[in-house]
Image (cartoon, rainbow, N blue to C red; front, top):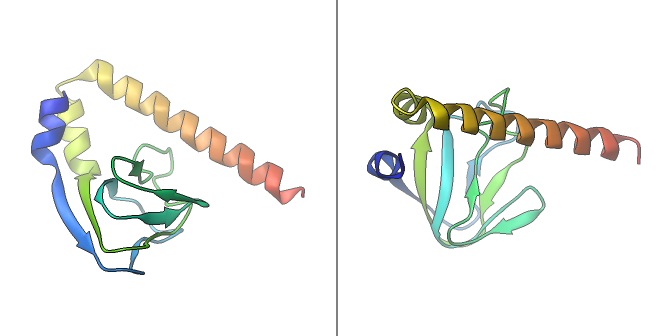
Length: 116
């Protein structure tokens, strides 16, 4: 499974202050920071950190991610992930469960924050 994922990764480069993903847009990619810093979701993502909501139920970005420095990221598209998962049904179910947990957590946090 991991080898299949690695073979599908592409590299993208972003200059400082460029928006990588915008809140409210449909998310087509998952990002893994290779080099640099990315700000989003109230935190900083550095080397090895993952962001992107392709596993979430709605598939819509819930935050804007912006490069804080010159940044290289690996990307995995939703299409490639779905294609790989057809060969690994157990992993597909695990990933869906993870996505549902992420979406539920985000919804609870948003609801909680709206009452403050």
